[in-house]
Length: 204
Image 1: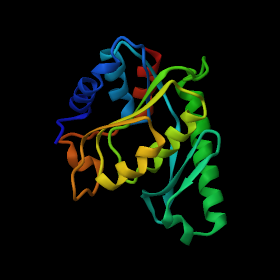
Image 2: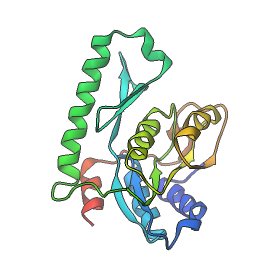
Image 3: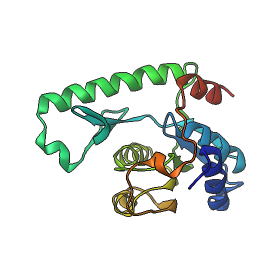
């Protein structure tokens, strides 16, 4: 159980100590992971940016991911998605690409995303459930030729970590509880992070 995202970030930064002084690029998945990414980047003398990916939502259950999409449009689909129509999937993908376009314009309006090529890249989230969003993020970043690609999360179920592992050079996860129902159950405080806070953290 983590007190809050700061507690989780402090513990992840300790686990990532090996990368201090190597100027890693810490890429947080918005929105919840951005405050954590800021703490980790500062602890490691690294640089902070965001990687934009969105989960594809199940019909009638927006919290349940049936896949994910990155900014390029590359899509990861889980086995659940096979039961859905092509039209539903196309419409959901278009909706999430629109959200990412708006967020990119809001989050980094006066600069391009930081280039991960040749960098040690640490992708941070506040926890994994299905892992689909992290898979999309890692896939998008692999295509940009980082020196090393690290996935760092406080908590995830064991089967999700197995799915993630082929997409990263290293996976750091502090806890792998089983049973696992939702990321928020492992935090005493798990408040919503708003766009305004993300924009301010990136501006700093």
